[in-house]
Amino acid sequence: MRAVAAVVVIGAALLAVASAGASGPIVSYSITAGTLGDNGWYRSAVTVNFSVQGATDSDCPLAKTFKTSSDAVDCTATDGVVVAHFHFQFKIDTDAPTVTSATADRAPDGGGWYSHPVNVAFSGNDPTSGIASCTTGSYSGPDSSSATVTGSCRDNAGNVSATASFGLRYDTTPPAVTASPARPPDSNGWYSKPVDVTFTGTDGGSGISSCTPTVTYSGPDSAAATITGGCVDAAGNKATASTTLKYDTTAPKLSNVDVSVVSRTATLTWKEPSDTAAVAVTRLPGLRSSRSTVLYRGLATRFRDASLKPGTTYRYELAASDAAGNTSTVTVAAPAPALYLPATGARVAAGTMLRWAPVKGASYYNVQVYRGTHKVMSVWPTQPGFKLTRTWVFDGKKQRLAAGHYRWYVWPGHGALKAAKYGRLIGGNTFVVR
Image 1 (cartoon, rainbow, N blue to C red):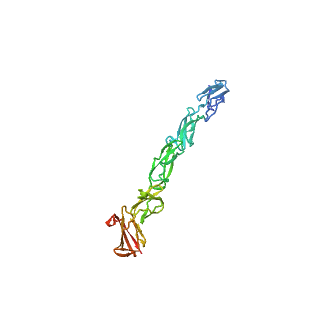
Image 2 (image 1 turned 135 degrees about the vertical axis):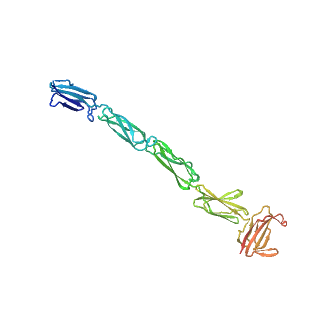
Image 3 (image 1 turned 60 degrees about the horizontal axis):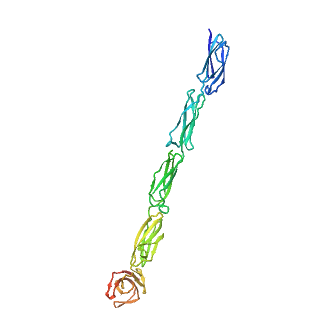
């Protein structure tokens, strides 16, 4: 009986199995063409030359090209005693794997855009040797609406796939934001009424998604009121902007406003707060028969009006304004005495003129003078004035301008003096003799 031996070649390994104590022919081979890959796999067709030794008969080929892993050579050789069976087969994978998917490790940050670094994992398929590994990638810039992360896979034979790309949109740049008041300041750089501030933005990447709604500033008063808002782009990047306003809605208020009238002159005094920009003094009635006249504008705390008409009551409006245009007004009355010289309570002597406001249509005036409670004079001048003398006669008695306190009154007379037709009292006043 012939002994039987078996030899199996898979890949580059020769596996020989023979019966115990048997010998027999030997078949050897040499690879003349083929690209060896990983893990015992070839990445191309393998061409093999065979050599049979010690055989009297063999059906083994002299050469063979193995194109796929399923290609095999089965042959026998015998020396007349032992029949050896040989099996040759190689692991061959000539096809590159395919990348089947690319998966980011998280969802976009906003609106389909990434604003922070993202990792991408690739997976693939290989029907022959199987996938050994696939690459991972990451993206962290620059900003782009068409950024890509590329990756590939490698099979167990060492074949590498073509690159497949993962597309993404990437934006890490915050928008540019502008804060704008809706109108110019009301006066001298100050706002004195509520003002709207709008926020707008520009973004060269993902575009503006939203901005802070309009903010209406209406206080508190401040020389540096700050209004802040911002915008967000589609990728979720945020930025803010501020604008600073000078805001004042409170008018300055004058205090200690007073007016004193001496003869035909009114003197006004007041105190003003530190934020006063100007004080305007308006008199009603005004000059030259006008309804009103602005007599002064400035920052003084005192004003004299020496153009009063005797017997007229004046009103002075003191308007205090600040830089923002806020104004408060105080009104005081100033009656100019009809008997205007000498001034009330003034010290007089012989030769002093008594003067009073003329009355239209009066043909004369009755001047009565009292020292204490006693009438000491009654005269009838035809003009609105009378000069005091050192002595005079009244009621048949000689009088003189003695020291004391005096009161004097004037009435207008109409027509002939003997008709004694008098009008209403023009006024009264006082003086002192020392």
